[in-house]
Amino acid sequence: MPGFPHADSTAEILKSAEKAGVDFVELGVPFSDPLADGPVIQAAAQVAIENGMSPRKIIEFVKTFRRISDLPVILMGYMNSFMNGIGIDFPGKLKSAGIDGVIIPDLPLEESGSVRKKIEDAGLGLELLAAPTSTDDRIKKISEASTDFVYCVSVTGVTGARRNLVNNEVTDFLKRVKRSSLKPFVVGFGISTPEAAMEISRYSDGIVVGSALLQKISSSDRGEEAAYEFLKSLRTAIDEWAEQGRGK
Image 1 (cartoon, rainbow, N blue to C red):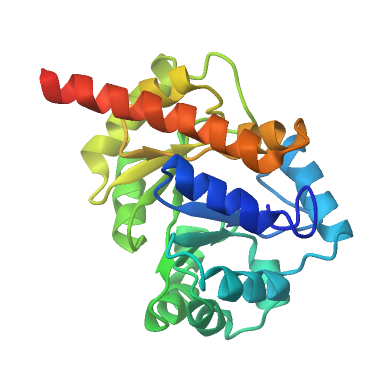
Image 2 (tube, rainbow, N blue to C red):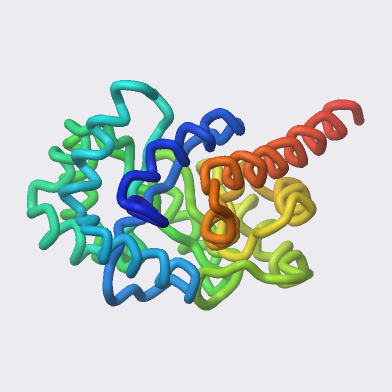
């Protein structure tokens, strides 16, 4: 969350994430009335807003960050933030700043056509969400409309770290996605430990961790160090699983 926990802490946290071996970073666009965010991300967004963060300031931040890093950056935000916070020509502005793609939770497949075209014309990626309630046919259509990957919501509900995330319902859903998706897919909502990261990696092409990371950052006086240690533990667990898989 840019601007969390302090207005000037984001660059150091991202450098720590890159050092820890993340493949891309998802920057949340702070919004006062989120639909899919749980209490941890809501609280972080409120802090970011109080620290003066806005969609346009995120654009300026990424422009500056691009001077020191090529780490892929994806923005996750709501249509209101993009259309009203930046403008109808937001895809071009994001692309020119060095942003690689967007995830828009309140943009359903059926209503994404015109927005998707503007995003694609700008050379920006659009990654759509699939949920456990999505049918196999819908998952296929979502994967067709997504640019690089499908973002799978592991459970119905809002974001937030969860215990006992991996169960038959979740794994059955991910197996369906594996059969139906035409593109790679990542899994978010609820992953909070190296063990869960390793387990989910058995069924997916990647994981997304938000709430647990923000909790680690907020509970430490050195948020960048806490971010590095936590993300490194996830990276190590996933790499160990991959080595085991190659050895079989």
